[in-house]
Amino acid sequence: MVPVGKIVLYGVGLMNGSLGLALRARSFAGEVVGCGRREESLRQALERGAIDRYSLDPADALDGADVVVVGTPVDRVAGTVAELADHSPARCVFTDVGSVKASIVAACAVRAPQARFVGSHPIAGSEKAGVGAARESLFQGSTCVVTTSPDADAWALVCALWEFVGCRVVEMSPEAHDELLAASSHLPHIAAAALVHVVAGTEADARRALDFVGQGFRDTTRIASGSPDVWTSIVTHNAAPLVRLIRGLADELQRIADAVTAQDHDLIHAWLASAREARESLSP
Amino acid sequence: MVPVGKIVLYGVGLMNGSLGLALRARSFAGEVVGCGRREESLRQALERGAIDRYSLDPADALDGADVVVVGTPVDRVAGTVAELADHSPARCVFTDVGSVKASIVAACAVRAPQARFVGSHPIAGSEKAGVGAARESLFQGSTCVVTTSPDADAWALVCALWEFVGCRVVEMSPEAHDELLAASSHLPHIAAAALVHVVAGTEADARRALDFVGQGFRDTTRIASGSPDVWTSIVTHNAAPLVRLIRGLADELQRIADAVTAQDHDLIHAWLASAREARESLSP
Image (cartoon, rainbow over all chains, first blue to last red; front, top):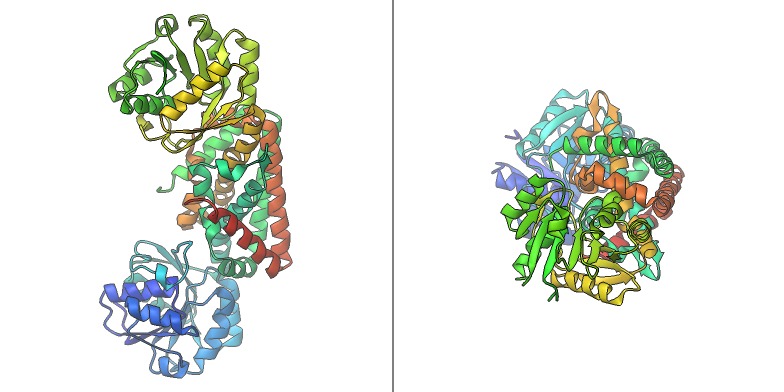
């Protein structure tokens, strides 16, 4: 259980909406209050049962709050924490759900040094956005990274929150998180979008390659339907690790193109076989 | 319906197995005979009802055959047609199911000039191989490319076969087919395998990126589980168009890496938005 009386969800979209539904489904004993700028999202969250009530006024919403989960795009997390910290009790613990961590943790330390902020990234999601796509099972069985913090009590509280809704919590430095997620999440997104661009631009005899795709292409590019707003924030906030990996992928492609040009069957076969082996080490 | 009495399926794996099941499900009136080198596959095809009988002896299997569908990997199609043509009636029409067309059509013209060969590529499949993965609905609603042929009767017969099992037939030159499929199918396969290699090689703080992947990475790389044998044949037989596209994808990635490095939010946003638009023009 989570030993707190009042949780505020600031910005109730897919992630915070799902968190609210999960808290309710698991009979969280305290109060869950929505806050944010867009009343329409908050009203929808209330109708779906993701929050007990909402307020557009941070001072009202955060009065007596124990935990605030900031669900804004990553480029607005630190600014939001800085703004909200003035309205919350000193004991209040802040966390977020952003897909990058180093820039957010650093910016919170500078812009809201008084706030007890601990970074979170529940690794769960959907190419769909908004509270309409929220579901109570989103976090069940998923991994949540909670970044290392000197504030042991705040850290334990954030971990308890995510474990309560079904996550396996992993502690990591913000930098290690960004390095790993650049590979496991941000690079696949860029790769899918790049593939769509190349394939959409291919024509032969006035027929478009896009009209001849099978299930393979559909699966490979599904995440390219993600929100451009959300993903522009993510990739620009994790530029250094991501750029290194994008260039690494480009190099890997040039190497296999060289092997295909050379008709090096053995190398191509070994390369495909080891990719299959690594892929099959994952669950489907 | 298909106006023939006897169809031979040579090499009964996923594609020919599914073809046999579809012929049966649609009450094909003639006989469907399996042939090939691996008796185990043929016996399994018989047990699954994909063929009426089988023979390991091509002379026996092809006696009186009207159509032979060669289901071998692409590097063995022309050799198989050359071998089987000696055992078949002169009227017999040959086709295949291979994912490349120019090299196969050219090789058949050289190695089996007496055979009435028309190239086919039903664009349907699975990352699973073998007759065990065959299903009668595999071709339902899919596109089948049948390559242009001067033999109008043979061409019409091959089209009738694929339409009978639910395909929409599209005529194309072998070269146009290879250009389009390099983009829509072969490039996504290479991109998925390259992505697996880069991500599997990423570690931070002794944690592997592969342990932190979400559904996005799983979808994006599902096809990397395809058979290395099958795909080595495909990529080496479609080298010229594929290499051009692989290098084009590498260039596209370098361009977006430059934009991320430059923190060019507008360019990144526009690039992600147009990828999403193109992706969403497809059905899911």
